Length: 177
Image 1 (cartoon, one colour):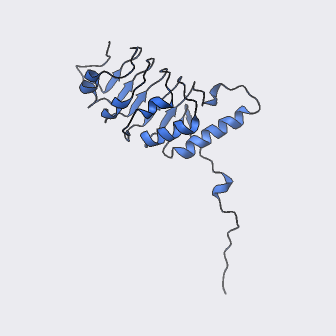
Image 2 (cartoon, rainbow, N blue to C red; image 1 turned 45 degrees about the horizontal axis):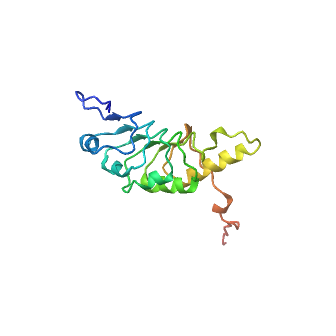
Image 3 (tube, rainbow, N blue to C red; image 1 turned 45 degrees about the vertical axis):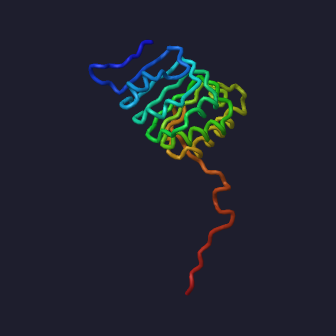
């Protein structure tokens, strides 16, 4: 296995792209977990993320192209409150509600999320005129669910509020003379 890091400069990046990993080897976790801030595990076959809780300094996580489903996220049993960036592009997430609930629980301070190339992401839809509505619903649902999110799929998060969130009766003020 080729581990790309910079031992001489104690880089905070660990890159294990295309290593055919199903889980992280214990030796790698023991050696790198305490100082890694940026972890790229793209193009693997990850099935178990239980070890990820050991990476307490992790701020940036790339899990692109791992054929991951919601069940793989459930193997992570410890939240990572310090994580700010999560890339889950080109996986197999198919239940938007379940995926976002898991992300909210596991990564409560997330500021950047990318889900391009997943069945839940409407980025490739050609269902005019409905695709614009689906994109709005997707963006709005995620923005409302992840309160600290600033970027979603390479765009700024714009929060909009449903009419149900406003009072249904007019607010009036009376002045006494």
